Length: 579
Image 1: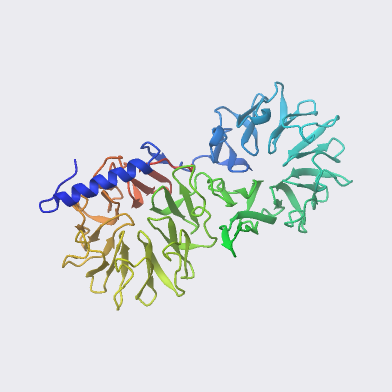
Image 2: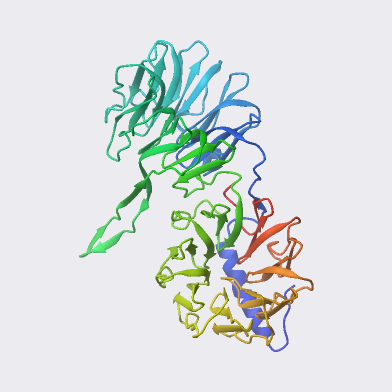
């Protein structure tokens, strides 16, 4: 039961009733723990679809991630030798050479025929298999002939948007299906591999060069020079694996659509935004292009994905994190390589938060009202998401840290001074002059730690948020949902102040390295790496998980932690959509 403090009982009860009403309306998912799996097995193949991806592990199992509508990411159990990922479905080749498909079965795209196969391919609304006798069998949509495979024997097949290509025994290429952009007009000559994209195709010639044909509006058919050993094609981009192991991509990824607006009384749709399909540096052994993203397997085993990830399709499993920050219905993590990864806890959320900017970050902060800010390795602050209060309007300059509240953010300059922006209705962006060594932001208040180790807070003080203790601290912590703050003393002990209707400021004894504050609960990272949480536990958000952690974050009714092995674990309200 919540604690009702003397002199504040009616206030706490009113706040509790309002909060429960809000969360009962907003919450659509039941409480559940969500886990990002550790990188135990390696990978031998990876394929991208429209909004999901799949990989074949070296233990012969298949794992998929991203949008799981229609069960397209629910890979079956068993041993497999090959995978194929389509628009809203997936297929795999079992070790007995039979084919199995899952996901949306509209137009029969998952109705794999009986028999034995040596290769599979999945297009937008259909699938194809290379049978053991070398002939091609296709199933699903046939409206433009993409499933009407020609006679003859083949050694490889590829399925695109509405066309297919096959590599014949004599190493020539035959394509069939839609040819509106010339994607089925295969050139003469001999090839060793083929790939089919949205409305273009590519082939790897026997001299190791790449030749593409079909739609080239986004330069997806303008292949670079060089020697390659593998190719793959997406909707408007293509990628190839160079002989030395680097990946070259050309064409563009669709990155989202600008907001619609009314100009001179006329409604105008926002422009579609495309970005270059640039591959990351590294040495790879395999690659797979999705609709608007791509993935590669590095030679030392890890999966790396890049491009559009509004459903987590580019969030490869086993990504190692070093920090996490949670908001309402979404969270962001910072990988050990400095990349930002954001995801939603429900599949019906938008993608303005998950479309993270490129670059290397040193810290991230998630705000309560749908925005994120991060400090790049060059010291610049960049924010994305909702901007109804100017919370994305970060000032130029060089910074070392950034924190976010409900609709405001503050950053610590190299000089030690503070810059704040966004909502200032409670004075939460009116940072005092002088220098600070640390920052923390609550919902509508902000705190800084002076060089004297004294905490100073500004903004709303309705629940005593500004009544800082006369104690010296080594660090301070709050959160975008919290109306309280905690400080860690030189001996590691916690001192908290502010809103305490549920015991969230009643810190336990012991030594701590970090603290994360939600609305109803608080969590602390002990010096031995274990977590302790306290306060209201109506969604199990205060049930700290066992094990060793390096970071923790708390929001309204969710807690996320980064384990010592770099994996993420979240518990409380909502599901986690990445694996």
